[in-house]
Image 1 (cartoon, rainbow, N blue to C red):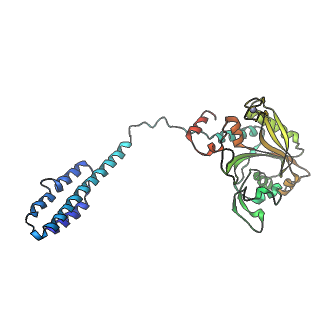
Image 2: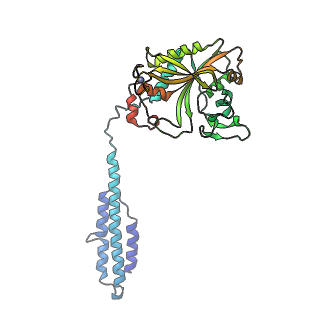
Image 3: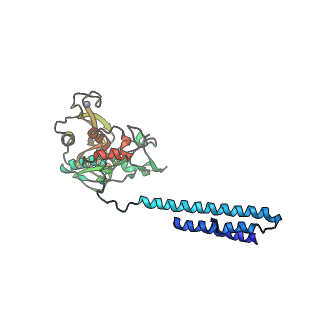
Length: 345
Ligand SMILES: [Zn+2]
């Protein structure tokens, strides 16, 4: 009989619930106080037959322990939920609302777009996931050009029968030129900002993604002089009216002739410092006259039209303007870094 009663109480205790400290105290009184049910069992214990005393004693102890630990468990539950309530401060004002800041790369990209817009360039954007045809083939890259290597470019889908159908993450924004020329006839005057990807190990000086702005101008009688004038205007708008530029011969598959452009170091004013490696000049972009092969591949008559193209790295320009020398800072989302640009836009 007493064993049945104990089993019943064990079941009851294991299902106990309480919403607050007061209810827990009621439960404690009901089971564990001097007048509680478990204490009453102790009184009955006297009447238990001698040969059963041991088994019943163990059972009663088990019940007492179960009741104690259940009550402690309920206490903890109630305390935790009250602490959670304390975290919610309903009297706190909603103002001032903290505003975010523009990312430094966005600030610089917008400034580049703004300068070229004032010179009559319009915005054109291409896809980040593109094919070999537009990123390499139409831009006059030789079939064995190293840029096509998986070491340099991220492949999404390879076509074993036709490399031009390989699907890749674009490795430069120059592919946007090909898309635009295919669908528009001259005169064309566009800038294409965007993110590009290369298969590189991440370090302070290299990253697997970065940003470029590409420019393209195609019309009748466009000359290298026009290119130089546009780039000089850009450099002076971006880095100050005293900025000088110089063009050094270079090579790109899609332009002929090609050049790299330096500006007079905006940190030492051209006198020479650690930043410009004491040369007084820093490189900022690549450019050249669009190769006639590219015009023809994109459906533009190269006998009637000529044009120039240029491309620059947004991170590079941002580094020159704001001295962000570690590329990783741009994508780490450290708010202390980002807040430094609060007043820049
Ligand atoms: Zn310098």
